[in-house]
Amino acid sequence: MLPETTHLRRISGQMPIPHSPQARSNRRLTLVAFTVMATMCLLVLVIMQAHRAEVALDEATAHTLRDYTGYAGRLMGGQVFRRFSEQRQLILAPVNGSARRPVAAPTLDDIIVRARQSFRELGSAGDPGIGFFRLDLRTGTLDARGALAGALGIRVADTLKARIASTTPTGAPDLVVLTFNGISTSIAFCSLINPAGKATAVYGYAYTRATAVAAMAQRVFQETPLLPTSFTGVRWNYDTTAVSPGDVLNAKLLNMRITDRAGTVLWESSNTKGAVESLYHGKTVLSTAAGGLVVESAIRPATEPTLIPSAVRRAQWWSLGALLALTLLLATVSLIALGGERLGARARRAEAMQQLALGLRHELNNALASVMLDAELLGEDETLDRSAHERIQAIIEQTDRMRTVLRRLEKSDRLDMVVPYLNEGYMVDLSTADPRAVPGSGRRRA
Image (tube, rainbow, N blue to C red):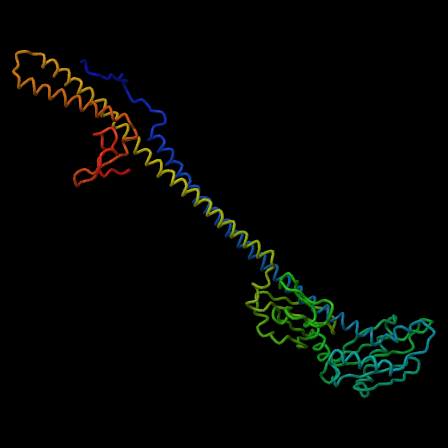
């Protein structure tokens, strides 16, 4: 029987093996390394961009809060001026309505009744500086009552005579501010114009400026939303002067102060202390005349976060959410790549065992073929005694057994069947055709 031999054609140099386990391992390692590096780079870029966006958002928010602080001051002063103008229009309506019309001149009592009603509604009816007057420009007769019944009324009459003489009367309500005995007094007046267009009389009333401004400013401060409702996130009731439950008061958000041009405080909110120290402080000058007002406004400390518009807050949450989602995505890709590398490592180990087995089979099979050939040739020697022939036959049998074992290495499904080997570990079992047929072998999957 001729032994089975295997011949391999040797090629000088190294021959690359396509799709080799090492090549696949290198590709997987490259993929993992690239994924990790890309993850780190993207995270760094995202963090940098998120930081820049946060800085830009803070700057924009600060700029917006400063703008709206000044806006609140201008709105406050404008509302105070507007309501005083409406008050003058209401009280002096009989005089203004008779201008250039052939109707009877109103009485001073008509003006007094309307004025007292307005002062009661405003909450300044107890002002001791309230007074009323009618100045007849044709005769110079002055009918003065209340606080204007004395020297102050004479001064008002002289001031208005000079003012009307130097200007063309329009018949519209007007205002002058006089200081008498150290007290700033506002004089609201309106000229009565006859059908010929001549001023025949002047009607008016007076009040202590600080008292009236304080009452009007307090009312405006309670009833008017000085900041956009998008800042507070709640609604204001625009249909009534009463604040509805749940509405945010200006007092919780703003500090306000109104002074005259000389710096005298006419009114300030109850929480104005520390207003000028606020990061968001505004100063608005309303009219440069002697009767002008200066409104200071400031956002109360620690209320800035509540004034950030909801759209800005949503943008912040979306930015953070996008950063978190990108981080999770990159981490997931990295874990998948690492898991693939682990599976690839196990597959490469199995392929390495198969290649090792094939290499051993080739080399050992050639050596065993040579041994069997020499043993069979030696067994044909008739000069040898019986004992030598028996030993030669034993060599042939064991060689054939080893070649049978080597042929089993071709079965790849046998390489993952292991059995205990002494007390040192496990080994691949090639002793039988089916390892599961051996009872008590303790086989397990590697």
